[in-house]
Picture 1: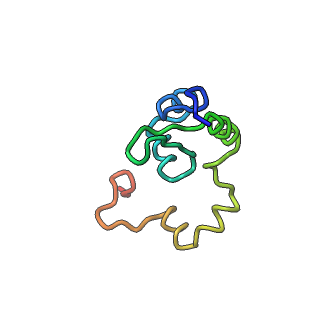
Picture 2: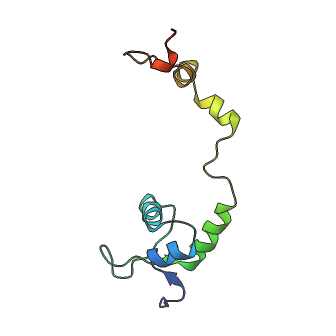
Picture 3: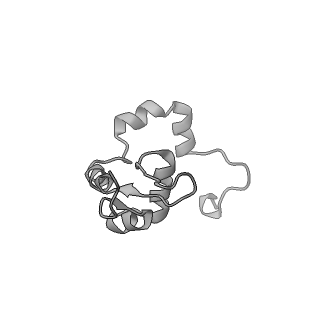
Length: 100
């Protein structure tokens, strides 16, 4: 069975039809989260199945990059939290913090 052009998209076409930039599409191809097909082998054009676009649209509806509060609390230690609140950076204190 031969692949037709309508069944596959180039990374630029995929980026134009999705909300992703072309750089993000290429990054996701590299990490394997977007499936690809290379009919000529390594170092040839990359084709993305059209159904991968539908899968990425479904995934966009899900909060992929948003952390829940429980996830944040599990991953952070007290030491990390204290660094976020008041880092101990050497050097003079800012003028707005100095008392007159």
